[in-house]
Length: 212
Image (tube, rainbow, N blue to C red; front, side):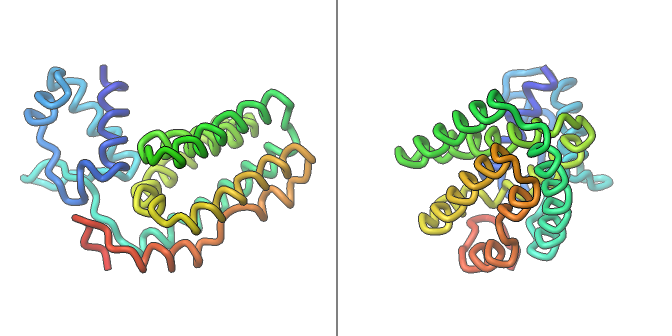
């Protein structure tokens, strides 16, 4: 139950249904999810560990605010960790890994075409983690996940920028081809460019997110 609560709350934060600064009250969330307070309390602890929520003394938990400087730091961390994972994945990549990644990328493309942002976000995450799982390193996955989830809160807004997402999807295809080659350096270089992405984010108004 705690895992189910965590996944539902995590997705609600990423999708912007629980906006930055929203109080996370145990009783309210328990009613919303139809669960008892115990699994909700454990889920909130996990959200704090993922950097999606914070606990304030005498006030309880709330959704973390968004901050552009923190995002810059997160992308730097992600690039280092994901580049390491991709180089290792390319060395170990199998045809089964390629098939799994391509199926998720096809699902992402289909979700974008029909305008289903929730499914697009899910499929995009599944695609990237299919590549990272090919590195066969549980530690890398544990380290990448918190930074990934914190950055993903920007994904729904970025999906509205068609040109940016088309370019990103081209890079995703390059990731599969590089890993399948295999070419570890090419795979690491196919990661998105953080300055360009941050420029795009800065040009978009995020409802309910006072970050700029």
